[in-house]
Image (cartoon, rainbow, N blue to C red; front, side, top):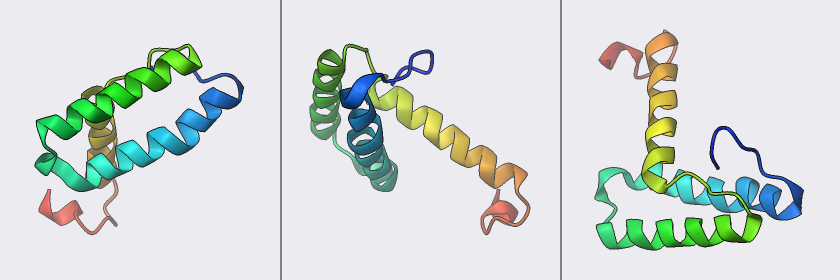
Length: 87
């Protein structure tokens, strides 16, 4: 979902709460091993969901970049994180 717009209505909440969270969690787990073909399929589903809910959601690449950045900041600024000493 675009950071400037929030989902409205039941479809938007369903997209954000169920579909988007599953897609983007799975992509973070796959890391760099996701194929271009799979990325394209997921982006197509994201675009379709955006047309249904009436808002253009961020692409897979944009969202993954944002989430990876957020996770990196968590590791960098929390000394108690297990990966803190490695980064």
